[in-house]
Image 1 (tube, rainbow, N blue to C red):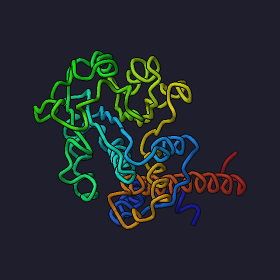
Image 2: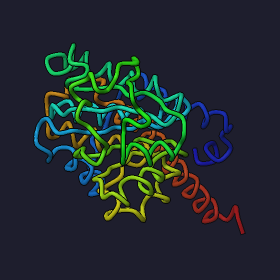
Image 3: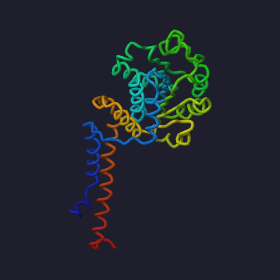
Image 4: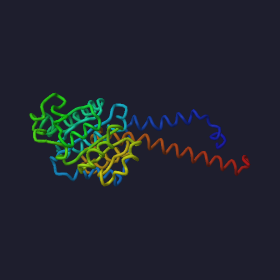
Length: 287
């Protein structure tokens, strides 16, 4: 048996790995996550605010990073909606406009009593403006210098939610989900740090080491990669059990399922390979 395993065609291992990833993905298998302290800091930053607080959400990513970042953007949106917060959306990326629409769809389809037909009073979509960090410098001091109108070309002075909003220093929390430049680092350098705006971020795994030094002074907390998104979803579900029956609220958890099974299989194969090696060495097949 051990000899058979030692000479097993590697293509069978590749096929086994395919099944390990495909089956949990197709079945939507999820496993419980234990939210880290860092993720819980982000959770409490949103959850501890009084209902109806003002949240500014900047979604700075494109479809290329959607697989990693959309679950956390959706989780932020649902969490804010559960708290009935007022939400301001914007993006520094031109490809980020459809990403905002995904969050708007969540508000109107999953929380119609609070948000459907409430554009301009419960949420507003500012859309995209070119200028990278230059836009950040403007919105933290005078929002209407760069955003005189929303995405529908409606004057911000005609929308109840933005009529008296001078800049984002007036909001209760700044949330950024970012795939790179411009994104989380720029929001910290030109927004939260100089103006002491409470800020949380969600970012890709490769960005996380860059953002860690800003915690906890300039940043309250950070959600990193799909693992962090899954933990944040679990934290929200733990606090709001009604989401347990909403499959859309488990995007990150579903994507962690295949990773967990694949990692366990990989570890098992490594252990098995070592067992075979030491057994054959014991039999004198190796010197």
